[in-house]
Image (cartoon, rainbow, N blue to C red; front, side):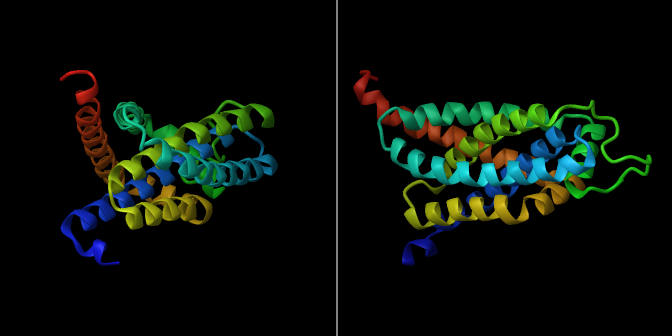
Length: 217
């Protein structure tokens, strides 16, 4: 327990919390947007399936990723992948306010913009189409989340375990609330993006130091 009292561990701890908050909310928004094109009676079912799938995938990826990052070269690869995550997040943060509102309306099942509809501007789709979009998003974002937490926790196993458990808990219990929070306070997502970018660059640097003896640098 004493390892948590060091400055390095506390910094990693705070980074992990911010990563979990932002990525859980981001995942929920993507799920909400995918489900927004469904009729009301199917929408909540699709959102529930999406959140359960994301929770299960985080558990599966957590078990595998923490072991894989011990392999020389995969830390560097993970850092590069997180850079791609940062680019995706940046693009998502630049999406139109209308899309964000549609996702928030679907998640909350409320007419937030008072236009008489819930997510009324989203093109209609079948349950199968929405489910496929949600599964693809869940696989990608769950791996992103686990990689970012593992990278931020570094050599602190207690922080790593806490971060992965918090990620699973937030996705399973509070994802919709966090998505609503990010929709209202947009700056939180930008802070999270900055933290993930820092973790990605640090993983790339540490990964480079790992592989450089093997490639003669």
